[in-house]
Amino acid sequence: MPVYVGLLRAVNLGGNSPLNMEALRAVLSRDGLERVQSFLQSGNVVFRSGKGSAADLEALIEKRVAADLRVRTLVFLRTAEEWSAIVARNPFPREAEVDPSHLVVTVLKNAPSKEAWRRLDSAPHDSERCSGAGRHAYIVYPDGIGRSRLTLIAIEKALGTPGTSRNWNTVRKLASISAGY
Image 1 (cartoon, rainbow, N blue to C red):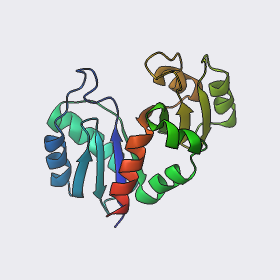
Image 2 (cartoon, rainbow, N blue to C red):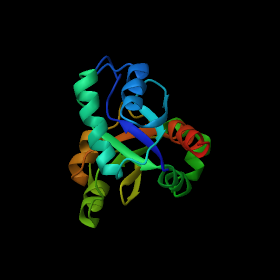
Image 3 (tube, rainbow, N blue to C red):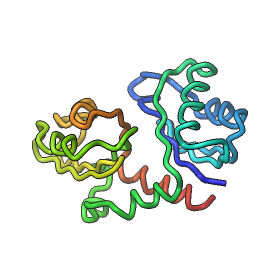
Image 4 (cartoon, rainbow, N blue to C red):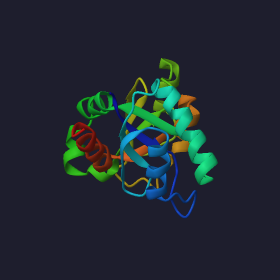
C-alpha cells in the first residue's frame, strides 16, 4: 500500500485558515487513510492508502477538510518515492547544508511547460536562485523569504499552476518520516 506525503496549502499561517492537526488526523483516519501522522502545525501529513490515485486522494482530502473542518485549502500529494526523489534531485546541495531554512521546495499541482519555467526565470527577483522541473521548483532565498519579491503568487503566475512551499528542514523531515513507513 503506497505511503503518501500530503501538504495542505496555507493552513495555520499568520492566523489564517486555522486547522487543528489532531482533528485533521481524525478526519483522514475516518476516511480510511492509515497511520496518519502530522508534522508541525502547517498542514503536513504522512499516511498509507490504497484508495485510488493521488489525484483522487487529493480531491477526497480537500472535500473532507472543507466539509468537516470548515477550511478550504488545496492538497498536494506525493508518494514516499516521489518525496525521496525531491530530496535526491536538489540542485542546491551546498545551500541545503549551510542554510536549509532559506532553501524552499515549491510543490506544484501540475507540471509547467518549458515556456512557463522560462517565465519563472525572468520573474522579478533579486538574489534568489531558482531551478525546477516537473512538478517541483527549488528556490534559494539568501536574504530571506519575507523580503523577497519572488513570492508564491509570483511563482504561480509565472508557472500557471498552484503550489505550496516548504523549507528544506521540513522537506528532509517529511522524507525521514515517510521512509519509516
